[in-house]
Length: 159
Length: 129
Image (cartoon, rainbow over all chains, first blue to last red; front, side, top):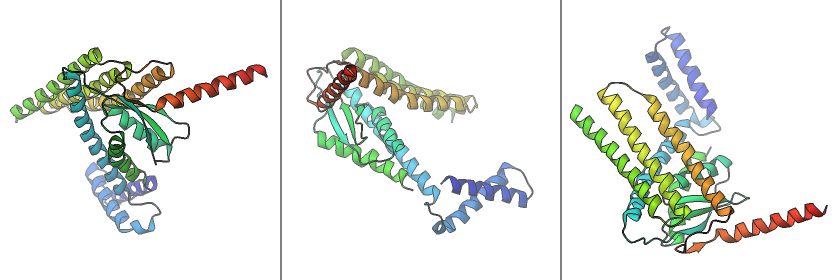
């Protein structure tokens, strides 16, 4: 991916030299031309086209913002409820993610959404121990994290 | 145009203030350190996100000053807040702070006990050597 971005920059600078104008406008045009060339040639790279990666990252950010808003409202309702009717729980979350940065990203995102907090990561990095503020059904909670965050992170991590 | 921008700014900052107030109420009301940390670290991050976005929009749309530092503030907050929350929760659990009686399930207890046992046996072994 880093190689593709570098190549794109080289193409943009070449375009600037060819059209002998050193403005930001020419650079953007050259960058778009480079993007087109790399898109056409994408079969010959070992990695996938890097805009696909960027798109996956944007999707992850949107999912995160949605979850952040939803769970903030849930915590708001819990706190303002006159009866303290909560069922906190520590549960184990088995993760399929392999790379260090993927696990770090997953646990950071889980901790950032209110209502769930990663308390401990097992030594083999296969299990995250999560504290949740109000759990109806542990399996349900695990499935929802797996379907939202883990899936999106796996898409970003794919090379 | 100015009216729409003003409404947006006021709305965002109000939401931010409401969430910060709720975080304070949460810290006072919730039963134990783990549930309190939910209120303290999370709702404040959302409150600060909304407030800073509101301030950013105010400077951008009304004063005409595109201040990227405010957005950087949000980014740094979102990098550091979860780490603080995680470390506080973990330190509290390992040093033996009991969760409240409301807690319905605790799958971590066994793991921490086992780890502590391993550690003490290791220590005894190294003391013998």
